[in-house]
Amino acid sequence: MDKLKICKQTRKIAADALCRTLKKILKSKKQVSEVSFRDMWLFEMRKNKSIFPDDWYMPPPHGIGVLFATEDDIDRLNFKSIRPEEFWPRDDVFLDRKKGIVLLYAGPVDKKSAVIGDFEITLYFGKNKNIQNQLKTNLDIIYQIFKNAKQDMMFLDVYACGSKLLKKNNLVNIIYSVSDPTNTNIGHTVPFSYEDMTVQEKKILKSGNKTWEKVCEMISKKRKFVNTVEDLKIKPPMAITIEPRSKIKGKKESPLISFHAIMLIKEKGNRELLTNYDRIFKLTGMNYMPKEL
Image (cartoon, rainbow, N blue to C red; front, side, top):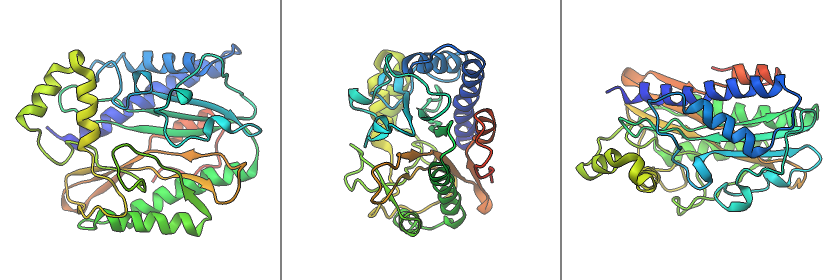
């Protein structure tokens, strides 16, 4: 079982489903709420039977995050975590196609391996250059972290690299995690991408839909974080998320910007960065964004 290939395919399911969802929404002039967007995206993902019906990061409901803000009102993006109910998708918050800022997260899970394909993207429909530059800088930092992360490097050193890049660009990392005691991380391992399941973990996975909360808890607790203290070394095969969340230091009007990319560490020193963003940026007119590596 090629776990890295499964991770790539599972993430692509979320990205492809989002593309189909956006095409439908952008062709229509109907109002679209966070809940209706979530339901459309979930419907598209569920067409693929290799993944579980719901995503692993729960709450929010179904494990999917959808938050709509605007350049004039960024309150929906002032969050540390999408777990509290106030940041679950709402049916009375609507997409603004002229000034909207949209944060979208999904975490599909492969049925056979429990490998996740975490996907997150921030989209912007407006023309504010400061916001455009923040979006570009956040994604460029992810690309630079990927270029600097090498085999045998400790996670804490990868974190130090990311922290330095954020500071250099006058950005702060906004993070809250129930699983990372340091509350500093900029990413984590993809569980089971680099280690085999125990007998007990296989039982939990096999129970799947009947005990979905246990599957979610198993995945959550299995992660190792790219933070200030983790001395785990990058070794092939391994998949690691890179996901700094940025706000401009000292600027309250700065939105929270977040992208999830996944770094694949393959045999013989080969590496790959999974983004799946270019088609989505093109759909939403974000032609200023850095191209995929």
